[in-house]
Image (cartoon, rainbow over all chains, first blue to last red; front, side, top):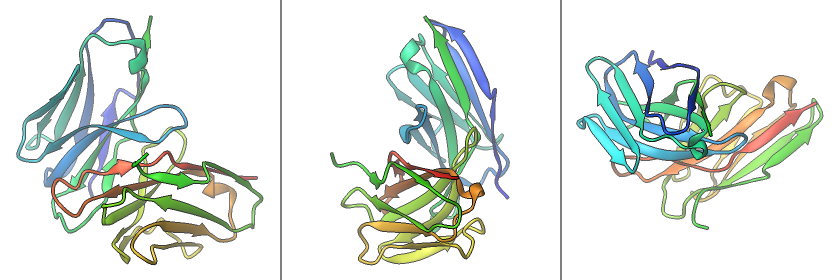
Amino acid sequence: KQEVTQIPAALSVPEGENLVLNCSFTDSAIYNLQWFRQDPGKGLTSLLLIQSSQREQTSGRLNASLDKSSGRSTLYIAASQPGDSATYLCAVKAGDNQGGKLIFGQGTELSVKP
Amino acid sequence: DTGVSQNPRHKITKRGQNVTFRCDPISEHNRLYWYRQTLGQGPEFLTYFQNEAQLEKSRLLSDRFSAERPKGSFSTLEIQRTEQGDSAMYLCASSLTLAPYEQYFGPGTRLTVT
């Protein structure tokens, strides 16, 4: 059974710092991995999607990497800003692309202090 | 707005009542997913449709829960005889049936059972 874990559960940093959020998964047979952002009481916003054949994806100040063999992904945020404060979730899609579901970690709550 | 929409955004109901939520996916998306998220946790998969066919149901979807997508467009999720444990955010997502099957989420419906 696929399990996704995110460490740390919460993180507080001063504005301007570079930071790394971690995601690990137990079954390396994934199809893709998505990183999402969730503001309090809101839905999920997709940030980056990495296919299983890819090593990393970049969007602006965000860079996500994937090491499928070790079951790990990281989300790197450069020059953090107070507006980055939110919960960040990673989710994996199973390797059999006939199935649809995403399996989520519990999230990392990020607070960026001015 | 061409994103995923959900109604209502908030629902407060008394234990034992029935509730129904609606999700309108992105118009060209064939797949529609329902997830449930409790406070401090990542979303958990409930069920998904491809067009009007319900292809997978989680064991979380007890017999009090039913989901439909009658014409392959919008979907409804009904909870009968609500219990306090049903209090959660119910999230809907949609995707194409083409790689990379990226899922786009709606704003969610917050259910509170008193």
